[in-house]
Amino acid sequence: MNPTVSSEIGDGSASGTPARFDVAIAGGGYVGLSLALALKAGEPSLAVAIIDPAPPGAAARDTRASAIAPAARRMLEALGVWQAIAGEAEAITEMVVTDSRLRDPVRPVFLTFAAEAPEDGPLAHMVPNSVLVGQLAARASEAGVVRITGAVADFTARSAGMDVTLADGSAFACSVLAAADGAKSRLRALAGIRTVGWDYGQSGIVATVEHELPHGGRAEEHFLPAGPFAILPLPGNRASLVWTEKTEAAERLVASDAFTLAFELERRFGHRLGAINLIGTPRAFPLGLHIARNFVAPRLALCGDAAHAIHPIAGQGLNLGFKDAAALAEVVIDAARLGLDPGSPDVLARYERWRRFDTVQMGVVTDVLNRLFSNDNGALRVIRDIGLGLVERMPKLKRRFIDEAREGASGPKLLRGEAV
Image (cartoon, rainbow, N blue to C red; front, side):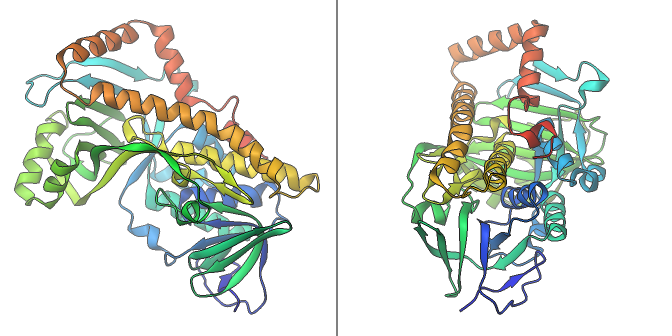
């Protein structure tokens, strides 16, 4: 039985011929799509497929938004996607950090970040997920990426390639299978790759609000005892919220009546932007740190949340996923141009070396930050507030933090805005 395929993302028409691909990607989110597009942009002769059980257009219902760091924006520019996204993106030009208790009448600002010169550009951009995934899908379709509607049921690595079987019994072969199927990756489990990490006993409530006054491109992160409460600007008088609470409290909040939810939201949001109104229904997601013990197995590479799930306290989950996509695309393209097998152990080992240290480093940073700030310990509060105050008073140190956030100088070519 042959897989249902299409030469265009989301069409789903039957091909009637056996399929073999250079790279098959399980997962049609932003990581899988950006990897597919990067491969086709760098080496159009590569046969690339996206395998996704979600129906075409499902991403349009995603009400969340993501922070795009400058390096990720450069990658999207190089792939010809940013131009279509920019009109619906909101620049973050300033970020302020506070540390207080919920009952405190005033939230003093301990740390501020802002671009020091016009050529620096914004600190980041907020982009609706539906727009980001939709434009990546459209561009991938134009580039000739094949979509296979279905889910991977099993796979077998052989010396000459990977045999992949879908849930409906259809099958195809590929040289490399990339798992971009999320934090609960089925492919990772089938490969027997274990993760190391822990749950935080926290959940992140994701919501969108509209507010009375303009935000001016300012993002805020309020460190509260239960966890950070981030206010991230969206186009118009709107903001995306990432609201961290203990899991039991988060579940009660999203299940509560509209009056209770609005009251608790207003206590955390404050009154700086005037009256606020919740848009849509908030959702809660459990938080933890989980990093795969191995990023690769024979002819298999893990990308995005399948390889790592970190706390959103630094807003780096999406950007780590883009780095994975850029790095894997580069090593596969380099191998293909040299006439080498892109799924060989040496090629995939290069990808793992490139991404593992950076991922572990970011995981440690977010874990320490969450443990340091998500508590009401008086001694720790004094220490962290002194630390924030010192950073605020040291321009060179602040600049280093900003430069680290902008990164890309030593990363994959796409993160530097260069073609692969």
